[in-house]
Length: 245
Length: 248
Image 1 (cartoon, rainbow over the protein chains, first blue to last red):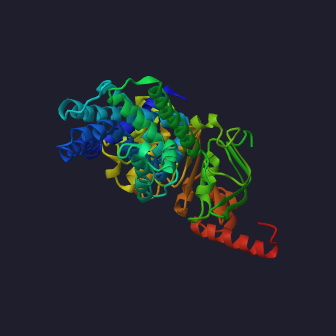
Image 2 (image 1 turned 60 degrees about the vertical axis):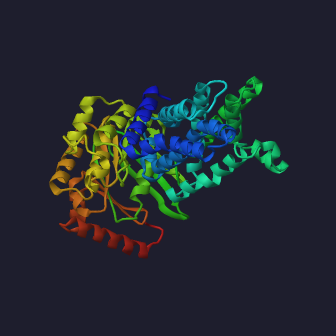
Image 3 (image 1 turned 90 degrees about the vertical axis):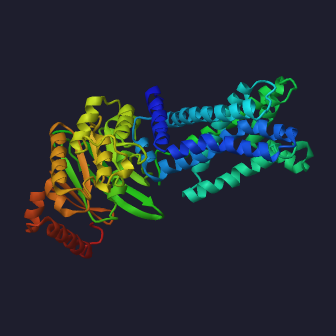
């Protein structure tokens, strides 16, 4: 691997995003707009807004980065730039880390805005600090990126890649405990929820925003998120082939 | 031949999409030459080039590039490849594309300026690649491969759709690179480009029909026009095939 190639790749991805101001605006504004919508939706029920809104601040980057990465990687595959990169002195890990750095920075900016609005203006509480929610948001963004990278290998077209969002992300959102506490789910759904990466991301966020002490469970959940990220990146790297049929 | 070949292909067989596209192809490319790979669209030129740069899964046979098996990690600095469709990023500028590829291969600003001038895009660095014409995009793609002066350049139809003047300038550049010791393999489906090459490889239906030079080809076929000469080679090979099917 080469630091120069990794940083060059990160810089190139950021250039691509910079030339697309509408995407930047959407990335930065939409999560905050949705959170504000929830605020008005639950105007008379501050507890519900707190229960859903606080962890959601750290989940937006996961959802967005999954989508952005799967489309970006699909484009690299279909426009021939990936094949071109594979003939150059550049390791696969340089490409993966380059994307990770660029999208990690973008996720940090996104999390900063949504957390500032959520915790400072809309009255959400993060018992263990909004900064912890922000850090978890970046970790979740990297998880979303890793899953998106892996998923992109199974899409031939952008139409397919976009469909992976409802197919792979919605079930995780529904089962992670955000909408229905997991111990109230049918037992088989509870079991399924344990297999989904987002469950651990949500549990950690719920813990960070609730007053109870963090405990060892928090560390285990963060490790689980990191483990899923590394596993998905590894699987994603396997789909970046130097030789193709 | 005094020197070892820059490139040897032995009995290369490749299957793509369930059908064999290269049927046991063998050839050599001399160092320091501009070799034209000519043949109609769909005859296997791109598949052969992909095999040479090591991105194609091959069924059997051997491809040796600059003394190493095709696709070896150490060749990635020594071999430059442009695909037929320009493989550059459309959503960033010409200059940004060049700076990205330069950072990967370790080329400095002077090299970027030289490569940009060579393909006639000086002064266009701030333009988004997506706003360029098809020919201009392929020139950006070509510039990115010239950055680190590779020993072997594999160029898939680099001059398609270009202005005749620029096309002739690019052929001059190819010869200049060859005089500097580089080896170039340039594909084209247009026979009028054949006269620009030092050596010719004529392909059809996944087979190598002839290995020649423009003059030799004209002499052996008695045709002054290279397109007609190619036609005559095809007819001869058909006739030979009818007499003895084992001899292709």
